[in-house]
Image (cartoon, rainbow, N blue to C red; front, top):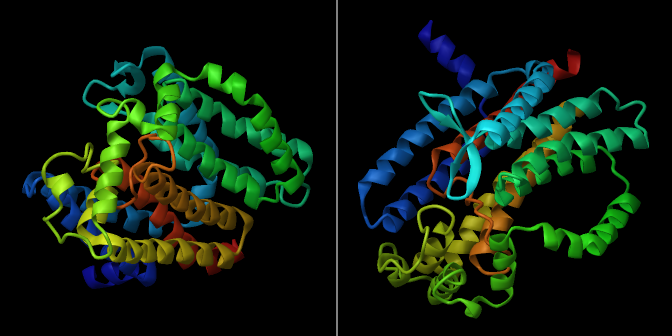
Length: 365
C-alpha cells in the first residue's frame, strides 16, 4: 500500500527538471556554506527550507491543472484582500509596509501574487480564447496593474517587478500585438520624467549609483563595487571553494542572499558561471518544452509564464550583481538563502510538473 502510494506520487515528477534542480541545489549549499563563513547554521536552515520546497513541489505536481484553474479567481481575490490589509494595517519595517501580522506569525502577501497573478490571467484568457478582443487585453492589464501598484506602494520594487513580469508574460503569450508592445514602450519612454518624479529618494539613488557607483563608494555604491570586484577577481577558473578573499573577508554585502552570485563567481570563475548558467538554461528550456506540449490554453500560458519568469529572476539578479541593472533585491533562484523564495519556486516547479504529467487528463477534461 505504501509502496503504491509512493509510486503514484513519484510518477508525476519530471525527471529532467528534478535532476537539474537538485544539481543547482547541491551547488547552492556549497556556496552558502562558504558565504556564511563556513558556518553550518544557515546551511542546516536552508536544508529544512529545501525539504519543505520539495514536499510542496511533490504535492502540487500531483494536483490536476483543472483544480488549479478552478481556484484561480478566489486565490487572486484573496491575495488582493491581503495586499489591501497590508496597505491599511500592515507592519512597518525599515521604512516599508510589507508584512501582515497574524498574531502567531507574519506573512508577506506580495509573495503570493507572484503566482496568483499569472494563474488568474491564464484562467481569464482560457475563458476567452475563442473571442479575444482589445477590451480583453485592457481588462487583463487592470488585473495585472492593481496588485503591482499596491506592491510598489509598500514600497517593494523588486517584488513588484517580478509580479509585473509574471503577468505580462501571460498577456504576451496570449497574443498581445507587437504594435501595442512597441507603442507602450514609446509611451513609457515619454512618461519617464513623470515616473522619475514618483520614485522614492532611495530608488532614484539606486539608478544614479548604477550609472556611477563611485558617487558613494562607501554607501549606496558599496554593494555594486564590491560585487564587481569579487566577480572580476574570480578570473577564468576562480580562486577555489572557500578561498574567495572578497567574500571570506566580509567585503561582499548580503553575500548569502541577493549577492551570493558574486561569491560563486569569485570562487568558481567564468567556467563555473557558465556551468551554472547551463543548468539554469536546461531548467528554462525544459519549462518551455512543457509549455509547448500543454494541451489547453490555461496550462500553456501558465507554464510559459513560469518559464519566462524564472529567466527574469536569473537575468535581473545576475545583472544587478554585475552592475548592469539597479539593485532591486531579487534573489538568485534556488541559490540564494531564504525560505520564502524557495517555497514560491517549489510551487512553480510543481505547477510545471503538474502540467506535464496531467496533460492527457487535461486534454480530455
